[in-house]
Length: 124
Ligand SMILES: [Zn+2]
Image 1 (cartoon, rainbow, N blue to C red):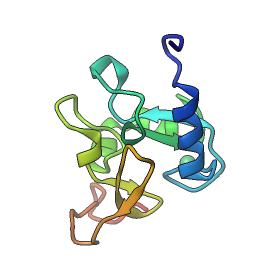
Image 2 (cartoon, helix red, strand yellow; image 1 turned 60 degrees about the vertical axis):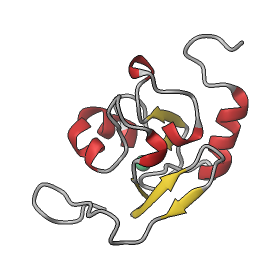
Image 3 (cartoon, protein in one colour; image 1 turned 30 degrees about the vertical axis):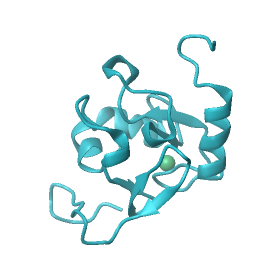
Image 4 (cartoon, rainbow, N blue to C red; image 1 turned 180 degrees about the horizontal axis):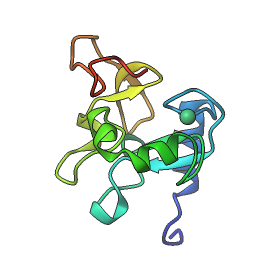
């Protein structure tokens, strides 16, 4: 068993392999695992539920997602407790993808779901 609050090493290693150690939102170097669905809401330590982000809980993309939950849900960086992370498209370095538990990043057709900011402009 791993300690509470820790992502199992194998999952963390796979997350770093998938992301190539770079933030999965902006592409800068990243080292912070983000749960799309919080553990407190039943989110699991699986690759579909995790994104490697830059920053921390208060800085970089991780801080941004934490401070902008509505936008995060719009872009799939955060999911509701009733949603399955693997089924929610994610804006991933500017592309709409779905994340598989096997570590694959599936690029979705560009017309799958429009991802727009509040002012109608694409934010990434
Ligand atoms: Zn970033």
